[in-house]
Image (cartoon, rainbow, N blue to C red):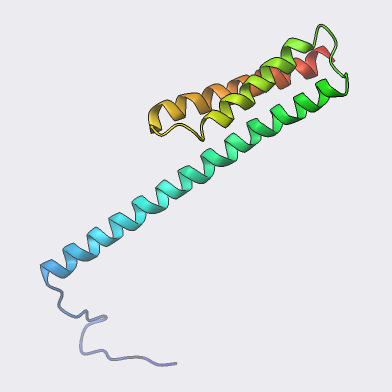
Length: 119
């Protein structure tokens, strides 16, 4: 193994100017912000896909005559949750989009819970 150069100290760093240090810190901040933004976007898309999937399954169950009069409202609530999940793709503002996504999750969860409890 290579020991490298050691001139009296454990690790020597090259001198860095304040401009280089500030540029490196700014590049680091930008890359972290970009990573956080893309992670949130991926999470939002995954949650919206899940609500849309629930709505598609509820719609399919309606087309094969699965719901009864007591379970139909729960299917409708699940479909409404999927519609809210789909609406997150047309919204541009992040704050209302977050609220619409939360409403989609709540509606999909309530609809699925109602379907399972009444079946």
